[in-house]
Image (cartoon, rainbow, N blue to C red; front, side, top):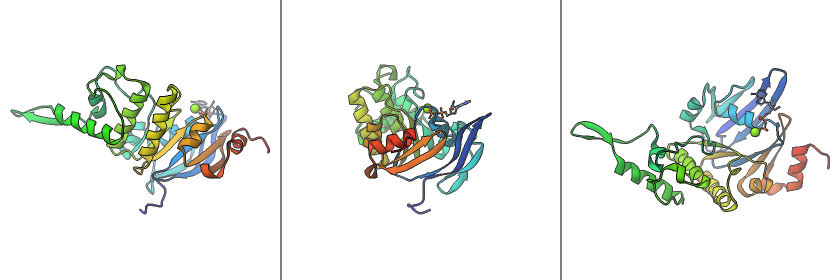
Length: 249
Ligand SMILES: Nc1ncnc2c1ncn2[C@@H]1O[C@H](COP(=O)(O)OP(=O)(O)O)[C@@H](O)[C@H]1O
Ligand SMILES: [Mg+2]
């Protein structure tokens, strides 16, 4: 597997809901270290596509290749164990436990005291501290229950957890919808830092300026089809709007 081969390849993905054709013949690649913005009007098929990539829904036709191998996920858990995950703000954290517990969630470190397994709290704390520090994420106290943290901090915890546990491709559906200006700025910077570690990132957003700030490429969908794929450095907001709406120049 060489480094220039795609991390993820979608080949002719179609999805029908009864008579509705939500996706038709969608093909594109995502590479390691790349941020791809997925744009399109309401109903264009963005969320459906993301669900299919992350194992939440099966395609009607088409194939998905991940790291060169064809995959057929039957559940989000299967996709996750392969390294593909959707991060939905808030939904995947347990708000009534602290940052450290959330970071481990099912992967707790255990030590034996007099032969009895107990949580290795100190080691867990330092693992989380190190992970967040190296990602440039400041959380005042790792012993704070997540319910007391801001949306931006929760997002940072989820994304850093994903990276720490070997995630390879992360899908973000409107990640900044509930965040303020400063939190969004930090979130965009964090996405770039995560991509720089060789992770592939797909961001659904309808805010064009965010797409231009964070993405390397834009994939524009219209009525279930790919309307265009452009490099951010080779396009303009006007061109992207035309791709989204389908209006002629
Ligand atoms: N579970 C479903 N059942 C029936 N139709 C659906 C379902 N999910 C999505 N659709 C339809 O598929 C199309 C694409 O929807 P969606 O992927 O949510 O678009 P977007 O995220 O771009 O707004 C729309 O016409 C929508 O009504
Ligand atoms: Mg959607």
